[in-house]
Length: 204
Image (cartoon, rainbow, N blue to C red; front, side, top):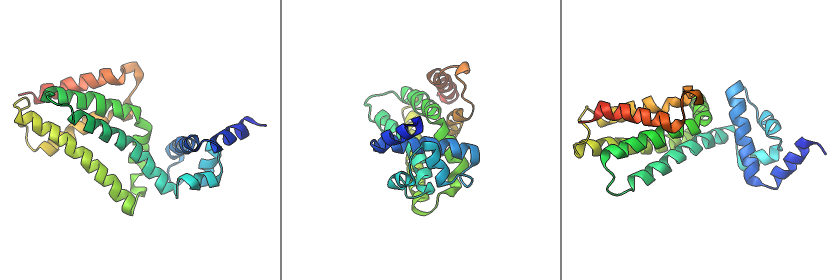
């Protein structure tokens, strides 16, 4: 029995392993060949599963691409909700943890997913695209809330439209997915550096 056949049979008995293998294969192939240049057949061959296994988990390549986005945005949303739920957290510490532990650490952890999503997001249509926008807008509102809280508590200066400030913070930090190199430091260390830069720039 070949190694590929053995791996395929193990995944057939483990639905989560099959799903993960398909996502990993899609990330690699979308990155190498693009969304349009990647067929369902090439994904299942790379993942060493059957087409039936693919369609058991995903109705189409579009649904798989949506799942790639959903994984990383849900990671960010869950941690954002947890952070905002902490009582009596000073506004400057709230902003520090947002930048360090959610934006930068999240960008590094999910960098392959983020890169593929930004590269291929125009492939999403209809309800799937609307769902993506809804979650992104929810996350943006949370970041704006952090900025507004800092200004209201007198910790951060009023630098103008909180939405513009929030977008600047997200854009600066999330871009780490594009260039991160462990030789430059770990995600947490880089996050601490960025948090310091943001706080010094905004501190009242």
